[in-house]
Length: 85
View 1: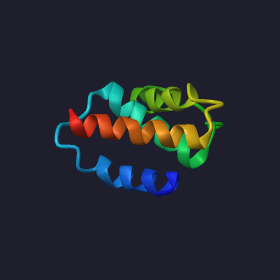
View 2: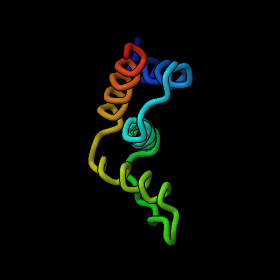
View 3: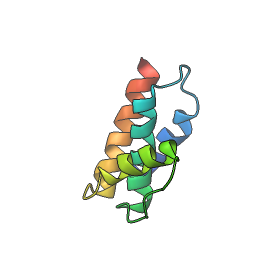
View 4: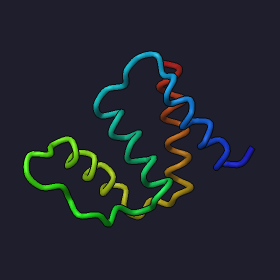
């Protein structure tokens, strides 16, 4: 099975995690997904009191330089760990 197929399956499985992941895990899921599907974050940071948006922006920004393949692999591993927890 290709990495892209495994990644797509993990994305589907992420919606069936029985227990809500921690905020830190949710940010990791979000940032790895964005890095895997869009690459480096070159967007403007949110302004004002958008604390959630800023946290998501920063989490994705921290992955700058991570290849799409590595992001996919880490995403798959994270979802597998959360599903088995």
